Amino acid sequence: MANVLVMPRQGNTVESCTLTRWRLAEGKSVGAEDIICEVETDKAAFEVPAGVAGVVLKLLVAEGDDVPVLSPIAVIGAAGEDWRTAAGSAAPATPGTPNIAPASESAAAAGVSPGTSQGLLPGVSPRARSLAADKAIDATLLTGSGPGGRVIERDVSDALEARPPLSAAALAAAKAGAPLPSGGSGLGGRIVTGDFASGAPAGPTAGTAGLAMGKVFPGGHVDTPIKGIRKIIADRMLESLSTTAQLTYNASAPAGRLLELRARMKAAPEALGLSKVTLNDLVLFAVSRVLVAMPQFNAHMLGDSLRTFERVHLGMAVDSPRGLMVPVIRNADLLSLAQISAEAKRLAVACLENRILPDELSGSTFTVTNLGSLGIESFTPVLNAPEVAILGVDNITLRPVMVEDAAGIAAAGITAASGGGGVVSFEPRLGISLTANHQVIDGAPAARFLKALSEALAGIDLWLAK
Image 1 (cartoon, one colour):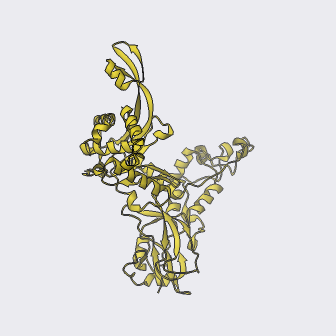
Image 2 (cartoon, rainbow, N blue to C red; image 1 turned 60 degrees about the horizontal axis):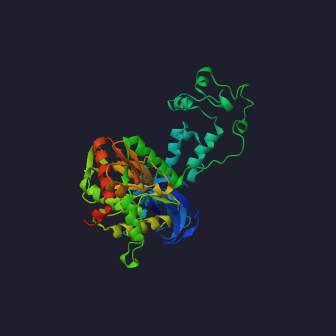
């Protein structure tokens, strides 16, 4: 009897995965341990085994589709078996094979009824439906090129290329239900709002017929589809910005002791295990301690409630070849500097080598992202929702400060010049940028957080001694 293969759940917080590549085609024999496809989330990539031996009877989704977890993706059974009939009457899966589900349950997960004329295949993939809605295209009128004639994202993209371009106002009108004319009077045949009222010409007007796109934009160009993990990251960033009231506060912290301590650790005996501690490790350590004293920043906004956490689970942004990843240092407030440093390096390497586990990429309560090594002096980090705050770490620059006594000059200054009421000294300062959700964190608490962190970084050696 045929079995329905479903999209496995990759971690407790993952709701959908993008199927990036089928490794086996319909009609091919497969073993239980054979890899049938590759999938990815916004955090990592995975291979999915078939789970049972047999023949691939039907592939239910197309490459590039964003598939909800536990939704059907393929049917595996005996050669010649009717996959539709089998899917509607498949027996429950054997315990211990989480990727295989009863066909009736799989159909419900997909939002269709088993045994119908459509079987397990909805007419339009989720990604195609989303793109069509965004571009005012009726996906139900398109001819699908996906499995079983399903309309997939590529079909919508082809329809977009065949349609004249629209101005932003014309697109808004089309989304509101206005019927599109066959052509436009704008530059290069672009449809503009005036075309709706006047009845658009079939093509560019005489005044614009000579303005071919090659003349407007001379030279070649490359169009690269935004898909896979890049598409998921783009959607998550837009969702974060559109659903939270984000405001960024910028400050700087004295970095003299940070630099001095880092230099001493780098020269320390290897047996102490401190030679590889970085400035970012020191910042992570300081953040983990300050958050304990200010738990409103170590929190998630969940609907109309704010959930604060006893322990600090520190997310750290990693620039990997596959895109931005945020592995989590668990219980960072209980770890020593050496332990934080070692765990940060282990997680970063796992991200870079694509070995990171799903559970290591979820569950953070506060995130730190560092662009200082790239020379960035100030930036606006985007919240890692549902977290309520994220810290951006900038580079270290020399900044003027006013000191009033010689001892202060010696302690803080590199160069100094006389000024009214004191002496202007230049000291190394570390830029820090805090983005907070203004729905739950006001400006004054955000300022106090940066002040507390600045003091912790200025006296980092004292915090290490606690």
